[in-house]
Amino acid sequence: MSDAESKWIRSREKHYLKYSNNCPICNSSNIKGDSMQSDATSACQDINCDDCGAEWTDIYGLIEVDITGYPTDLVAKKIRNNE
Image (cartoon, rainbow, N blue to C red; front, side, top):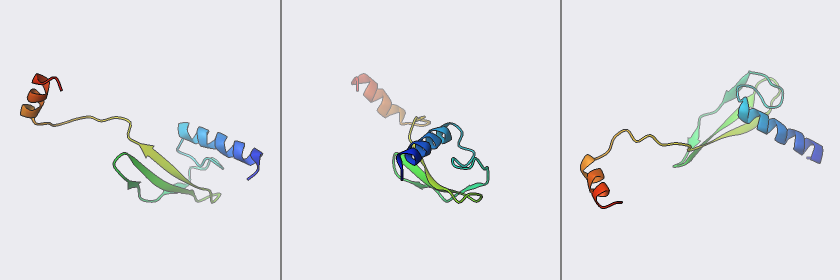
């Protein structure tokens, strides 16, 4: 890959991070994703464009947690012990 191609591809990757509904190469909305693969802190999904044939991987990371349930007795103990 030439330097010019590398710079152009990187600019398209940055653009796609903001506007991920279309192909980062041809801007088509005719894109499809495979099933997601995940581990404890991240997930990824292979995506392809049916119009131009481009292929890429969307990579997702853990950005927030929302605790929706907890053992109140354990939390009370942690609070008492300043943990």
